Length: 111
Image (spheres, rainbow, N blue to C red):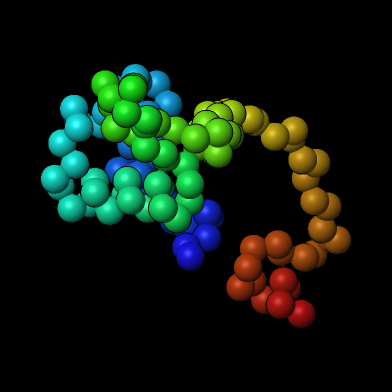
């Protein structure tokens, strides 16, 4: 059994997000693409994030389970990174003893 924390692909995330927000099947129920079929089978059989819909609700084939909802809600709770430029406080200049040249490679610096 594949662990739940396997590396998720953009397609897998798209499928889960679709079922989180929509009441219709992913790609209008066309699961003929191999990658889509494998992802849906993975979420239905291994991770238990999708389940088949009972016959009386056949306007779609699959829906998210409680586990799938919790997974997507956790992903959606992660805040976007924010880029902030901060200017650091000025640093006091370093006082070198008299006669010491602080430039790398200078003779007095290497003593």
